[in-house]
Each structure stands twice: as C-alpha cells, then as structure tokens.
Length: 419
Image (cartoon, rainbow, N blue to C red; front, top):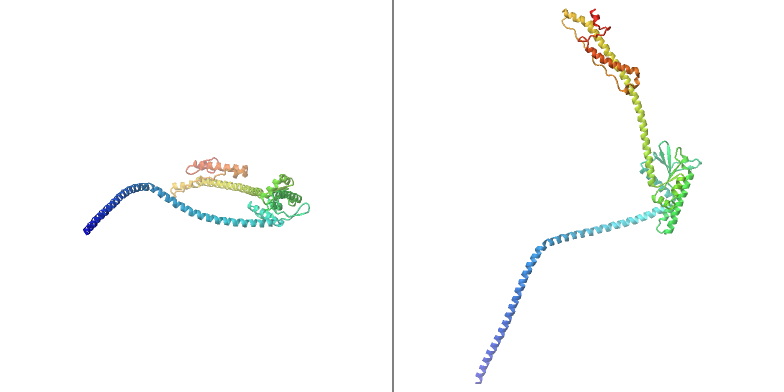
C-alpha cells in the first residue's frame, strides 16, 4: 500500500510538475510570441519610416544634384586659387627679398656716392658729367655746337676756364659753369641730422650758392669771348638742389640776374638748349634760302640769255623760210613757166614738178621771263617775225597752185611775166 501510494504520489507529482512545466513553457512562449509580434510591428514601422525617408532622400538628392555639382566646381576652383595663391605668395616673397637686397645695395651705394660727393673735385666732375649729358640730350654735338674746358683771358687779364661754351650763329657764345656748391645740401640730408641742424645746413647751402653767384659775376666770363652776351649760366646739377636754395632764399634768383648770372637746373637748361638748337636750325634755313635765292637769280639770268638766243634763232629761221619762199616764187614764175611751155609744145615728155612753199613759221617767244632783257627792238622783231610768218602763210595760200607772189614791184609780179 505504501509503495502503491508512493508510486501514485510520484506519478501525480510528475504529472503536476509536467503540467506546471508546460504551463511555464507556454507562458514563456506566449510572452516571447507577444514580444516578437511587438518587435515585428516596430520593425515594420521602422521599415516604413526608412522607406519614406529613402524616398525623401532621393527627392532631396535629385533636387540638390545641381548644387552638389556647383559646390564641386567651386571646391576645385578654390583649390586652384589656393595653389595659385601659394605660388604667388612664394614668388612675392622672392621679389620682396630681391627688393630688400636691392634697397640695401642702393643704400650702400647712395652712402658711398654721398661720401664721394663730399670731395669738391668729385662734385665738380659730377656736375660736368651732368652738364654734358644735358647738352647731348638737347641734341648738341661736342666740338661742334659746344666746347668744354676752353681757356681764355678776360678783360681783367685773368685766365678763365669755363666748363662749357655753347656756340651760337654769328660767332657768338654762351658760357656755362657747372661748379655749383652742394656740400651743405648733402649734409642736410644725412640720416643722423636733426630738424634744427637740417634747417641750418639748408640756410648755409643758400648762402654758399649766393657767394658762388658773386664769384661768377666777378670773373666776367663773357669778356673773354667776342660777341658774347653779357651773361653766364650757372648750372645746378639737381632740381632739388636749386629748389631748396630758392625756397630758403627767395630773392636769390633776382639777385643772380642782377649780377648777370642765370641759375639753371637741368630742366631749365634743357629748354634753353632746345631754343639754341632751334636758332641753329633757323640759321641753317636762312643760309639755304640765301643760297637758293642766288641760284634762282642766276638761273633766271641764264633763262633770259637762253630766251635771247632762242629768239635770234627763231628770227633766223623765219628769214630762212622767207628766202626759201621767195626762191620758190622766182623758180615758179621765171623758170618753170618756160619748162611748162616746152612741155606744151611736146618738146619734153615729163611735166615739170610743182613746188610748194613752206607754210610753217617758227613760233615766237611771248613769255615775259624770256623777253624782258631782249630790249624793245628784239621784242618788236619777234612780234614782226610772228606777224610775217602768219601773213606769209596766208599769202602763200593766195598765190594759187604756182605760188606766185602778187605783190606789186616784186620779182614774182605776173605783170612782169606778161611783159
């Protein structure tokens, strides 16, 4: 009994355990199935959302395609510009480096030139070089239009040697001096000079230029050259050098003119030299015109003489034609008449020839240029010769076939023939 009851109890326990297990598994399956369905619904919604988002993305992509292409081109252009910018910045850096080196070299050369110009001999040589350059730039030729370092003796008996002497037409000369002072001007433009010192140095520069004007006036260069205007040109080899002195001393220019000294910068001297060149050209034109006038007068005289010879020749030809016509008239009226009579009597077989007088007369001169110097008689003869030529042509036309002259008292008078 106990065993049976135990077995039954075990069986019932197993069945209950199995039922419980089945119920637990079923509940688990039901829960899992519900979770799967929920997940399926969620996934379905996500799929729908993704499909909708994909459609929207496709529409947006189709709309943004031109913008994407434009952005791509802009990006490529920006890249090219960036490369060019980098290249140009590199080249600019190289150029700035070269400019810096050139500036340093120019500064050192300027300092060397400034230190060299502190010497009076170097300043004088530089002024002479500048003067020669301006003269040549104006078209003047050395040793032809101007001479350098000419030595002369002034009226005071002093030997003067101007830097240049410009030759003018008519053996005239203009003296140019290029030794203008500039030491104080160069010192005033130093790097370590203060404003007060610079003003003092510029004032000293104007004073030095005024003293130089007095020295040039005392030398009286123009007295050493004949037919030279009483003036000397003081060439200042820099526009700034002269402008600074005039700004500090405004009356310097008028004072120099009163002392017969003309202060000239390169620009002013160039204008003066161009004027001198125009004077030379005008003088050459006048000389050519005078020579042309002499040649024209000579040619006119020769043409007049030639006109006289032509007139004489025309008169001779006119007389020759007249004598020939007379000869033909005499031959017709005195000789060929008998020959025709013999032919009419059948004494000869050939008829005598018929002679024609010349009806062309030489043309007389009528131009006043060729007849002015022939004299009244020659002009009258020329006119009469022309008239005789015309009347002779008319008269020959009126003589008939035989060309007999019908003037009374002539050798060809038909009345004499009938007699």
